[in-house]
Image (cartoon, rainbow, N blue to C red):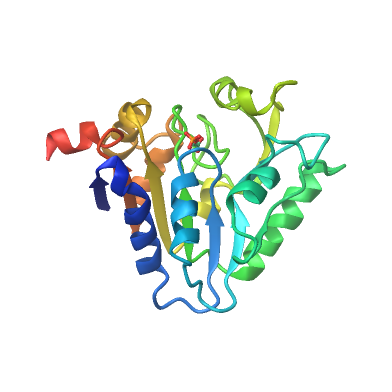
Amino acid sequence: MELIVVRPEEFAQAAVDAFGHALVRAERPCLALPTGSTPVPFYRRLAETRFAFPPGTRAFALDEFVAPDAEAPGSNAAFFRRHWPPDFPPVAMPRADAADPEAEIAAYCAAVAACGPLDIAVLGIGVNGHIAFNEPGSGLADGCRVVRLAERTREAAAREWPEGVPEYGLTMGIAEIMAARRVMLLATGPAKRHVVHAALTGPVMGEIPASFLQRHPALTVVCDTAAGALLTQES
Ligand code: PGA
């Protein structure tokens, strides 16, 4: 594991640097990208620095809510419209309002699989240890699927969904994430300090899905000093 712990004001650039490094020799790379508050400064910095994606880059969102309105402000589709520059490679994602969510995620993941193993999966981490919508209780072999969202995940999303947070999500699985050539885990802020520490140094177990990343051969963790506080105390 490569651990990069930087001051909060350096986080976005450190993430851009690690991302650029991972893509340096990639041809027509396939990316998986997260939503949430953590990647926002990273995406902003990618835009500010006019990050040059390799030609033919294909980008996929890690997950999406299941909701009647695909354009709902809390949807990941709306997130990428707000935070992902229009001149960057477009981000594909499953439709939140698909009539048949199971078929939707299956078709989506067939497109991800056709792209090839992901060159890089960029991840956030939930306070409950989830990665993408792989909630506690997920297994190493769990692939793309429809999932019931954990209460803590729904609480964290409540502000974005004033009329009620969806109960279900569509997600890439632990299996697709673990198959990525490189994983880049992003974490910021003191609220993540315990889960980051548990995930990276504690037992590998489905109750903290991010702990599976300990078994990934090419994991880069980029966090700020607040999220990484318990990791650096030990070193
Ligand atoms: P956050 O979400 O970046 O908004 O904290 C992280 C996640 O749930 O993956």
